Amino acid sequence: MKASDRAYASLRDDIVEWRLPPGTVLGEVEQAERLGVSRTPLREALARLAADGLASAQKGRGVVVSDISLARIDELFELREALEAKAAALAAQRGDRARFAGLRDRLASAAALLSDDDPQRHEYYALVTELDDEIDTAAANSYLGQALGALRVHLARVRRLAKDDALRLRAAAVEHAAIAGAIADGNAHLAAAATTVHLHNSLRHITNHAHAGPAGRPHREVSHD
Image 1 (spheres, rainbow, N blue to C red):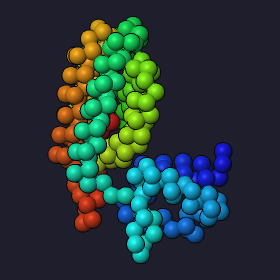
Image 2: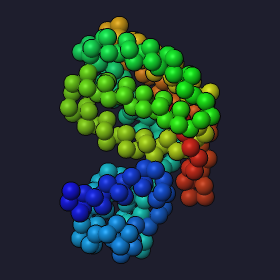
Image 3: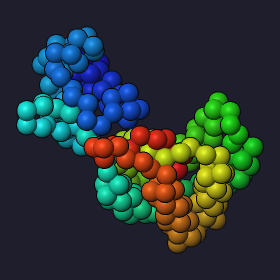
Image 4: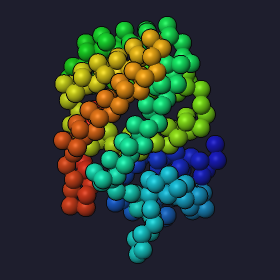
């Protein structure tokens, strides 16, 4: 892997996981030393982060990690609804029904995984990721898949904004099961509608629990919606 690719991947992960929170200055000397690369590949990595919307150049400060405001979250979910509802509808038309029926059954029983035990929650998170991957594959649209991949980088940051509580996780499991079930039944309209319901509930949960700091920087965690 090229040095610039390594630096980009490390910085992106640190931003997504909030190890580098919004407003952090990404100084070239400091980050180059931390990541063990020269300044040229680091500049390339910073340019890619800016293109992704994860960082921006600010006069007098250099490159900083981008803020997330509730207004931008609304915009993200508008795009998310358009893309994910379409992907679910295409998956219902093109996907392996038996595979999605299996996911429906596993998600329907996922409440047993959703206790206060973090390792158990990770199993549920992995199951939701599996559903997302299956939908992307079944939709069989490379442009849609690329757009969803870029969007999910930002959504991963959003999932740190509200309280991660078992009640919402259990409700989300039921919603995911409904999406998988509609796809398993080959019902494109219902798959899109179930996706829309889930996303509306997810957005409401985030906006009800997000808390912004003095610079508009939310700082609490959110469930895997």
